[in-house]
Amino acid sequence: MAKTHIQSILVAGSAALLILACPGLRPAYATVVGQAFPTTPFSADIQLGDTTTKSAGPATGTLGVTSITVTNFNTTTQQVFFGAATFATGKTCGGVPVGGADPAMIIMIPPTQTVHLTYPTPLVFPKLNGISCIGISDTGTHSLPIRILINGYTQ
Image (cartoon, rainbow, N blue to C red; front, side):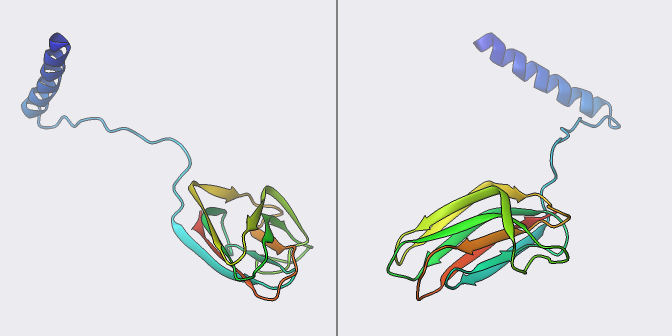
Protein backbone atom coordinates (compact mmCIF):
# COMPACT_ATOMS: atom_id res chain seq x y z
CA MET A 1 0.00 0.00 0.00
CA ALA A 2 2.80 2.40 0.86
CA LYS A 3 4.49 1.59 -2.45
CA THR A 4 1.34 2.49 -4.44
CA HIS A 5 1.03 5.78 -2.55
CA ILE A 6 4.67 6.64 -3.27
CA GLN A 7 4.23 5.76 -6.96
CA SER A 8 1.19 8.09 -7.14
CA ILE A 9 3.19 10.94 -5.63
CA LEU A 10 6.05 10.30 -8.05
CA VAL A 11 3.70 10.29 -11.06
CA ALA A 12 1.97 13.49 -9.91
CA GLY A 13 5.32 15.08 -9.09
CA SER A 14 6.74 14.07 -12.47
CA ALA A 15 3.78 15.64 -14.27
CA ALA A 16 4.25 18.88 -12.31
CA LEU A 17 7.96 18.95 -13.16
CA LEU A 18 7.22 18.29 -16.82
CA ILE A 19 4.75 21.21 -16.91
CA LEU A 20 7.24 23.50 -15.14
CA ALA A 21 10.05 22.46 -17.50
CA CYS A 22 7.90 22.97 -20.62
CA PRO A 23 5.84 26.18 -20.17
CA GLY A 24 3.98 25.63 -23.48
CA LEU A 25 2.69 22.23 -22.35
CA ARG A 26 -0.86 22.28 -21.01
CA PRO A 27 -2.65 19.53 -19.11
CA ALA A 28 -5.38 17.59 -20.91
CA TYR A 29 -8.97 18.26 -19.90
CA ALA A 30 -11.82 15.78 -19.87
CA THR A 31 -14.50 16.23 -22.50
CA VAL A 32 -18.07 15.58 -21.37
CA VAL A 33 -20.03 13.61 -23.93
CA GLY A 34 -23.81 13.42 -23.77
CA GLN A 35 -26.94 15.51 -23.85
CA ALA A 36 -26.43 19.24 -23.31
CA PHE A 37 -27.74 20.78 -20.08
CA PRO A 38 -30.89 22.78 -20.81
CA THR A 39 -30.33 26.51 -20.53
CA THR A 40 -33.71 28.26 -20.64
CA PRO A 41 -35.75 28.06 -17.41
CA PHE A 42 -39.42 27.13 -17.71
CA SER A 43 -42.18 27.57 -15.14
CA ALA A 44 -45.96 27.22 -15.27
CA ASP A 45 -48.64 27.87 -12.63
CA ILE A 46 -51.90 26.11 -13.50
CA GLN A 47 -55.21 25.85 -11.69
CA LEU A 48 -57.66 23.10 -12.55
CA GLY A 49 -61.37 23.31 -11.92
CA ASP A 50 -63.89 20.48 -12.20
CA THR A 51 -62.85 17.95 -14.87
CA THR A 52 -60.56 20.48 -16.54
CA THR A 53 -57.84 19.72 -19.09
CA LYS A 54 -55.02 22.21 -19.72
CA SER A 55 -51.52 22.27 -21.15
CA ALA A 56 -48.25 24.13 -20.69
CA GLY A 57 -44.98 24.21 -22.55
CA PRO A 58 -42.42 26.34 -24.34
CA ALA A 59 -43.10 28.21 -27.55
CA THR A 60 -40.01 26.49 -29.01
CA GLY A 61 -37.66 23.74 -27.92
CA THR A 62 -38.14 20.58 -25.88
CA LEU A 63 -39.52 20.67 -22.34
CA GLY A 64 -37.60 18.95 -19.53
CA VAL A 65 -39.50 18.99 -16.21
CA THR A 66 -37.44 19.04 -12.99
CA SER A 67 -40.30 19.34 -10.49
CA ILE A 68 -44.08 19.12 -10.23
CA THR A 69 -45.95 20.41 -7.18
CA VAL A 70 -49.67 19.68 -6.87
CA THR A 71 -51.86 21.16 -4.10
CA ASN A 72 -55.33 19.83 -3.43
CA PHE A 73 -57.47 22.40 -1.60
CA ASN A 74 -60.43 20.00 -1.40
CA THR A 75 -61.54 17.71 1.42
CA THR A 76 -61.51 14.64 -0.85
CA THR A 77 -58.66 12.85 -2.63
CA GLN A 78 -58.15 14.07 -6.20
CA GLN A 79 -56.64 12.33 -9.21
CA VAL A 80 -54.57 14.27 -11.76
CA PHE A 81 -53.24 12.90 -15.06
CA PHE A 82 -49.98 14.23 -16.55
CA GLY A 83 -48.68 13.30 -20.00
CA ALA A 84 -47.14 14.55 -23.22
CA ALA A 85 -49.98 16.55 -24.78
CA THR A 86 -51.35 15.89 -28.24
CA PHE A 87 -53.44 18.52 -30.00
CA ALA A 88 -55.93 18.84 -32.82
CA THR A 89 -54.40 20.27 -35.99
CA GLY A 90 -53.33 23.88 -35.60
CA LYS A 91 -53.50 23.96 -31.78
CA THR A 92 -50.46 24.66 -29.58
CA CYS A 93 -49.31 24.57 -25.95
CA GLY A 94 -51.65 26.48 -23.70
CA GLY A 95 -54.64 25.08 -25.58
CA VAL A 96 -56.80 22.11 -24.61
CA PRO A 97 -55.10 18.82 -25.54
CA VAL A 98 -57.08 16.06 -27.20
CA GLY A 99 -54.92 13.25 -25.83
CA GLY A 100 -51.79 12.25 -23.99
CA ALA A 101 -48.73 10.13 -24.64
CA ASP A 102 -45.63 8.97 -22.75
CA PRO A 103 -44.24 10.04 -20.43
CA ALA A 104 -47.54 9.77 -18.58
CA MET A 105 -48.54 9.35 -14.95
CA ILE A 106 -51.49 9.61 -12.59
CA ILE A 107 -50.97 11.31 -9.23
CA MET A 108 -53.35 10.88 -6.31
CA ILE A 109 -53.39 13.95 -4.06
CA PRO A 110 -54.74 13.43 -0.52
CA PRO A 111 -57.30 15.90 0.85
CA THR A 112 -55.92 19.37 1.71
CA GLN A 113 -52.34 18.29 1.01
CA THR A 114 -49.48 18.98 -1.39
CA VAL A 115 -47.51 16.40 -3.37
CA HIS A 116 -44.08 17.42 -4.65
CA LEU A 117 -42.18 15.35 -7.22
CA THR A 118 -38.59 16.09 -8.22
CA TYR A 119 -36.68 14.84 -11.23
CA PRO A 120 -32.92 15.44 -10.80
CA THR A 121 -32.58 14.25 -14.38
CA PRO A 122 -35.33 16.16 -16.21
CA LEU A 123 -38.45 14.29 -17.29
CA VAL A 124 -38.32 15.04 -21.02
CA PHE A 125 -41.51 15.60 -23.00
CA PRO A 126 -40.60 14.77 -26.61
CA LYS A 127 -42.01 16.78 -29.48
CA LEU A 128 -45.25 15.34 -30.82
CA ASN A 129 -46.18 16.86 -34.18
CA GLY A 130 -43.50 19.50 -33.54
CA ILE A 131 -44.75 20.51 -30.07
CA SER A 132 -43.18 19.67 -26.67
CA CYS A 133 -45.91 20.18 -24.12
CA ILE A 134 -47.24 18.73 -20.86
CA GLY A 135 -50.96 18.00 -20.65
CA ILE A 136 -52.76 17.99 -17.30
CA SER A 137 -56.22 16.63 -16.65
CA ASP A 138 -58.31 16.48 -13.50
CA THR A 139 -60.73 13.58 -13.51
CA GLY A 140 -62.59 14.26 -10.26
CA THR A 141 -65.44 16.45 -9.12
CA HIS A 142 -64.52 19.12 -6.60
CA SER A 143 -65.54 22.58 -5.47
CA LEU A 144 -62.08 24.11 -4.92
CA PRO A 145 -59.24 24.31 -7.45
CA ILE A 146 -56.20 22.11 -7.73
CA ARG A 147 -53.02 24.15 -8.14
CA ILE A 148 -50.08 22.80 -10.13
CA LEU A 149 -46.61 24.30 -10.36
CA ILE A 150 -44.28 22.95 -13.04
CA ASN A 151 -40.59 23.86 -13.18
CA GLY A 152 -37.92 22.82 -15.62
CA TYR A 153 -35.90 23.85 -18.63
CA THR A 154 -36.14 23.92 -22.39
CA GLN A 155 -33.48 23.28 -24.96
